[in-house]
Picture 1 (spheres, one colour):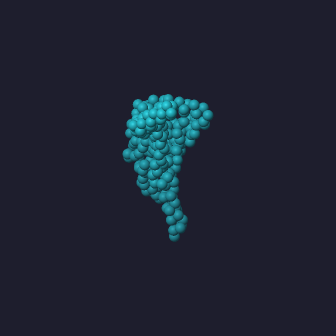
Picture 2 (cartoon, rainbow, N blue to C red; picture 1 turned 180 degrees about the vertical axis):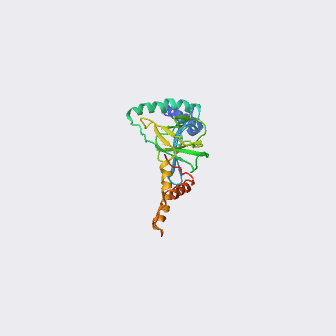
Picture 3 (cartoon, rainbow, N blue to C red; picture 1 turned 45 degrees about the vertical axis):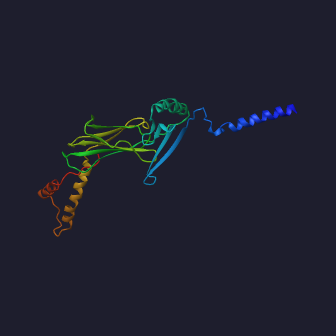
Length: 251
């Protein structure tokens, strides 16, 4: 009986302590909690004509590293992100880069004037560089072999939405007879720079003259007299035609 009473006493004490103790849920966890988030966001403009990708790394509700497809690389947002760019992004890239074949797409380069103008009139010469990857590209203008560094206007890198880019670099110029302008493009996909030249096109000027000459001779062959202009008459006709403005074209 004494043994049973002692056991009952111990059980009563345990029960009393259990009742008086606070619930487990109300006891504060002494271990701090940390939250690491990874988010991928897609932004669509005009359907799928342009797509922008954001990859965001967030620690305890604070974004510290971000990849933006418009920029083309990871960028640190905070001091923590600057460390992560080196320890995570660059480290992992260097490991995986050994097993990957770099993707490159050669640029398409065209040169044209912004509008048709005669000689000695202000104009913009446009160098269009399109459909290339990656986004690192260098565009330079030359006039008669000498690099032009003044009067340049650039649109900056424009994403096409299909992981390729385009770029326009324009040169302010006043064209003179005999001048040759060259747009030079350097890109990782190219073994050597691409050079596209532009100058006055004599072929376009000659074609313009031929089109104007044809009605004169046709009229002479179909007229009642059946005579074609010769000698002074032909020279007079050519003088009249040469008074028309020069047509500019691609060189």
